[in-house]
Image 1 (spheres, rainbow, N blue to C red):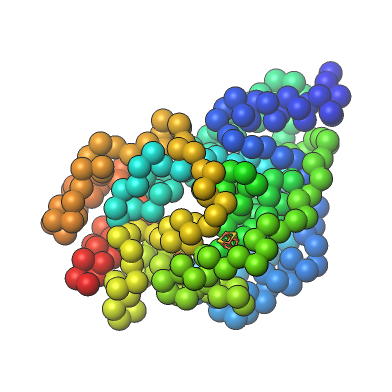
Image 2 (tube, rainbow, N blue to C red):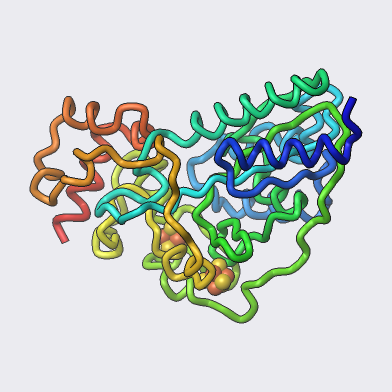
Length: 304
Ligand code: SF4
Ligand code: SF4
């Protein structure tokens, strides 16, 4: 039987072997009152737009131990998605296959490895409510949430998917990250083309990622003038962040774009048919958007 110190080291080394860049471990429990208040205030101001799922399950959101019986530890991992080359039109994170399945699949493999050592019950999450991912990544000592609303890992940047394994075993816990390395920097705020980012915070309703992916119905008038060669998502605030100078291309096979995607041109995007869309984005996060909505975005971008 491994002691909790060696088991924690084993989990971290397995996480890296599986392809995650970093792994930290936090003690599970209710989130601090300030965090719950900050979240509730953000929702009360209507900043979540039509993403009503962010308003549900607040009991579990503020106390993830309700998600897994006997939950004692939260293992947090991060997977690099920095692309080898940028593809016009599609945000960096969505160039390969759908990260939700990739990260969750790897976390389930990690779970099997843990069970090979000691019987463990748990659940894997990746960008799925109600887990407050960035909060738990901070508690696990991995980094901080920047003014751009993205999680930043010191020395590595913010181009990362976060994932969590909630488990019912006790482990050795990392020291929560307490610094904020944004300092006086305002580069992301200046780079945001729609003023979704301000010194006061982040308003999803004005964010191009929200508007192009989550928002159904018509786009705000002339929003295409703010879209910078991207009709699915937006990378401006991350591209402006000095911490991403250290980003290195990911090597995860499933995150590499299909050759066909790299060969798309403005004319081909404008003429994209539904069958072509389905073939191009099979098992991709872009499926979330749907063909009609993607064409809405493409037409808005290229009419400018
Ligand atoms: S993703 Fe784009 S629109 Fe949204 S906050 Fe960042 S820079 Fe602004
Ligand atoms: S651009 Fe500057 S302020 Fe914005 S997240 Fe990066 S370091 Fe922080």
